[in-house]
Amino acid sequence: MAPEGEAPAAIHTERRGAGASLVLVHGFTQTGRSWEPIAADLAIDHQVVVVDAPGHGGSGAVRAGLSDGARALAAAAGPGTYIGYSMGARYVLRAALADPDTVRAAVLLGVNPGIEDAGERATRRANDEALAQQLERDGVDHFLDGWLSQPLFAGLPHSAADLADRRRNTAAGLASSLRRAGTGAEPDVWDAVGRLAMPVLVLAGSEDAKFAAIGERLAAAIGANAHFELVPGAGHAAHLEQPEAFVAIVRAWLVRR
Image 1 (tube, rainbow, N blue to C red):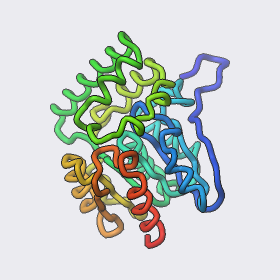
Image 2: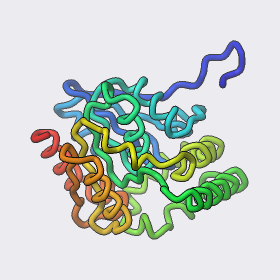
Image 3: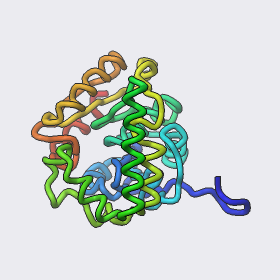
Image 4: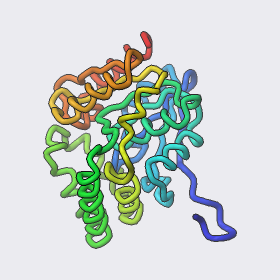
């Protein structure tokens, strides 16, 4: 809560273009600017709303978990098709479940609906707490060196790592995100996804075996209104590794959904 007499921190959004609204939600350590040049392409014939997630960028002072953060994102961005990557996809999934009138369709890239086993979830929370403490101790630059060296990002070209933008984030904001919105921070929503009635496109990079398996299972759990597709030649950050292929898949789905 904000101190008495102060307004609570707000979700930061930026808008461009005109037409049907597409809301873009980034991954951990990124900001809304990480969607360039994808946002520029989509803004040719849509209104594009890029969002800074809680603890990141212009929303760096926002302290929120997945559920309350998802509601705050939806309230700030308004009705439209929501496109999320990794952490951003988890926010979009929670927002779609909580507010289907606002999230009218969803694209989920590299999403995990949560860890089902309570013991594994507790282990993940402990690991994220250790990372949060590392951030607070060593700072953002040192943390990013380790974060981006993970095998998960092995296919990410250095030119697409948007390091300068990631460095705009604060240690306090990123640490809060890990503690409140990490994969183990809240119970999973696997049992709830079958009630999603809007069109859903589930994506994963073809080289991202873990999230490809999760994505295929998720699309099956949602039902006939969901479509699963792999982004060819890409790992976890498929939209940054293969942006043209990613945009082509999304645009084709937008037409036929």
